[in-house]
Length: 218
Image (cartoon, rainbow, N blue to C red; front, side, top):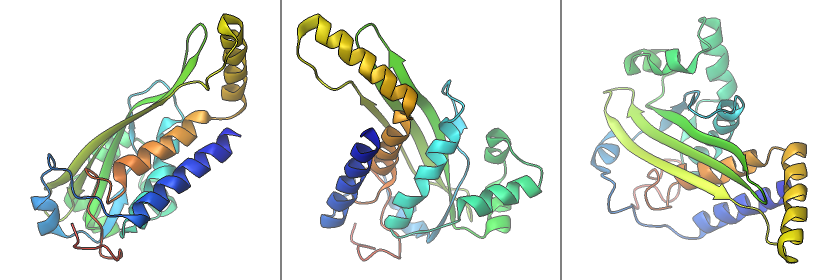
């Protein structure tokens, strides 16, 4: 059920983004972004500052789609991952430490997306649980090393509401815990966080890329 909800939520977000073009956020400076005009993006394995080991893989797997939908060519995750492994690099910290020019030489991308998962997972309390995903990100021009954009997003989803007073709350808490154990609800919330953070046209997100019909409209 939650998987269906997360897909519907993501679809609703995508539909909303496709139906209207939001102006850039007034507090975000897009000057360097507009001058750089990146057409291709390399998404690096996120750093993981959460306590959940699965956070890096989950957030990485969900980051490419909103970028592609925003009009960018995105280096496939499998190609990125295998290239680093072939060169003996499987640590996100080591990969993030590579010089932008070196990443440009290897992958040929115009820009790289650096992400940090600040929070990922479920917090259990006496009568409720909250699924939280928090992500920081910034985009670096691999040709010049300039920072083109940065943003952060935190999404928290609480339990479904239930009547019946304290007994109803306790029953709902048990149901929520079982649901959390049977499936990774954090993955669905991470999808929403990624789309909210990275999608163009959201106000504060990236600008549209050259493959989008909305390119140069912001």
